[in-house]
Length: 194
Image (cartoon, rainbow, N blue to C red; front, side, top):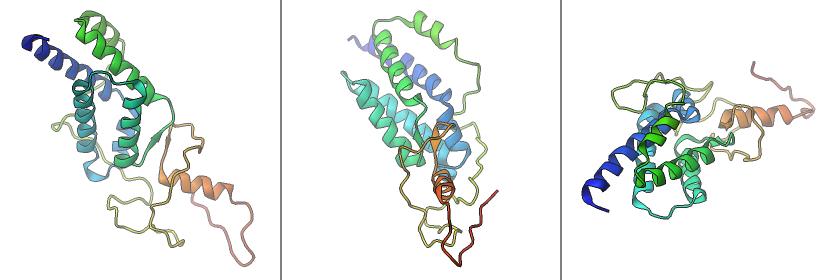
């Protein structure tokens, strides 16, 4: 590929990746709810940058490989599992648009991306996202939970846990465990949060 053509491809594909990531609702919710701590927005930008580099730097990526990368990043950086099919859809689109970009099919890509709902770009350092920690959660990984059970807050999230929002957080997993709990042991009282 000629250098000028390669440069144009990289520049245009970068814009496509940014557009797709700026419309990824689960990523934005993870940042807004403090799942990535105080630097969640910067982490999201780094994930977007890494995904772009991964797509550009590897020629024959399968959707499964890219999906595995994004799922692992969301789990590691945001402690979030997306079970709403947003990751497979994003990966499918990224790889499709990469192929179309390499074929210089920018008008088709632009027409498709213009159908996305209008939204403000938020994956930029100059845009500030409101950060709201989830109930009882702290931005510090070292903090202990306020619950009386003596855990460190690092419990495993059941990947099969059903959720309507498409995301499973630690606090949701705790709530689900609490809801499955039927009868307290004799001498104990169950207190639930509202």
